[in-house]
Amino acid sequence: MVKPKTLCAIGLVFFVTSYVFFSLISLNTQKYIDLAHWFNLIGAVLLFSFNNVFPKNKITTVASVITTLGIIAHIGLCTIDFIMWSFGNDAIGSEKLREQISNTPLILYPFIIVGPSLLFIGLAAHALNFIKTNPISTLMVVIGGPFVGLSYFIWNNGFLMLISCMVFTSGLALLLFREEVKRWQY
Image (tube, rainbow, N blue to C red):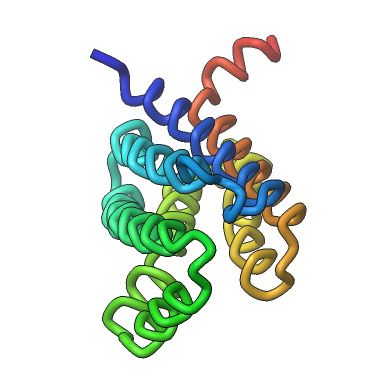
C-alpha cells in the first residue's frame, strides 16, 4: 500500500505538470489526448491525501472539508474541459456549450468560478497549521494559491500562473517533508 505522504508527492508532481501544459501548450494542439486535464485531474485527486498527513485539529478538519469540496469541483471542471476539448475545431459547438454553461449558475459557480479555488483554499488552510514553525513554506502556499487564480483569470498570464503554481506546490512539498528538511539542515 502506498503511503499518504507518497500519494501527496505524486499528486503535486501531476498537478505542477498540468500547469506546465496549461501555460506552455495550446490545448487545441492536443489531438489524441488532453494531457493537461488528465494530469490536473489525477493530481487533484491524489492531493486528497493531504487530508491525512497533517496533524489532526480544528483547522485540519475545516481544511479537509474545503479541500475535498475543491477536489470534487476539480473533477467537475476537468470533465467539462474534456467535453470542451472533444469539440476540436468545432468552434460553433464549443461556443454553444460555453454559453450554456455560462447561463447555468448551478454548473458555472461550483465547477468553474468558485469550486476549483476551494482546493487551493483548503490546502492553504492545512498549511496554516505550520505558520509558527515553518512560516516561509506556509506563506509560499498561502500566497502562491491565489496568484494561480489571479494570473489566469485576471492577468491571463500563463507563465505567472506556472510560477505561482510552482511556489504553491513547493511550499506544500516543504511542509510535507518538513522533518526530512530539518534533518538535512543539521
